Image (cartoon, rainbow, N blue to C red; front, side, top):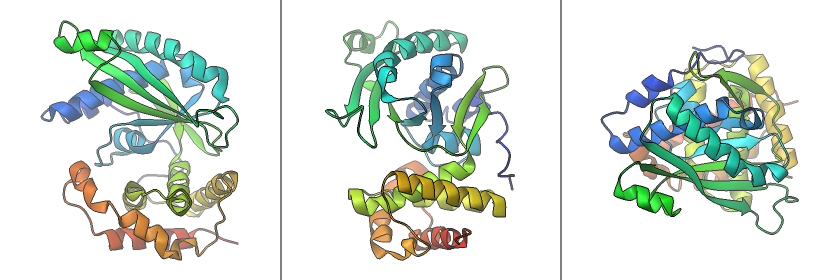
Length: 293
């Protein structure tokens, strides 16, 4: 069991990439994710603004087996001018990072940026950037589409703004590649709990969060102090989105129904799926075990 009060050991991203060499699609996804993380780590304007979270954090640093394609960050800066500057900053950083890591034939460039919500991006309570990064190999037919901004192979990157971030950690990206800021374990769990509750409000289905929370609490022991931090972060995040919660919130059958709706689709990411009801009970019991007043 890991100590929740300390950061995970430095991630060997070369080994993480090589672990899926037999699967060309996953291998390429991890290669370009490695380049992206290295680009963030080596660029102060990006490193100081972005906190890594989500499935890539769980996979690359905590060892979760759930496959994920998109890379998720929370930004610790206002939406502007960050959103207007990120294309140039990231394009330059990714070009240099690819060379640093020896991916000399791999091209990466920001292809599309969508501001959400479009008309109120700067003022909205939960604004976000949804980006696609085009990918191609030099000298291939795909490179022609890449040059036109029409790459068929892309990496998705989502960046959230105005998200309360209470507990963070600094993670080593390998022993020589620098560091990235990331959600702490407690912050990661708190955000996933909040996302499950928000399903009912947003009419969305978040089947991966039940799996991720259950996986984390099965593999990492959280002491009383860690649970208190989870609850504090969860309450602050819920309050920031005007989401009412209490100790009985996860007894709402609608939360469970929405989370279960597409559970079977994770077979593609995981393989043999654990029983949903068992995983949901683990999440319910953990939630009720938090130190509610």
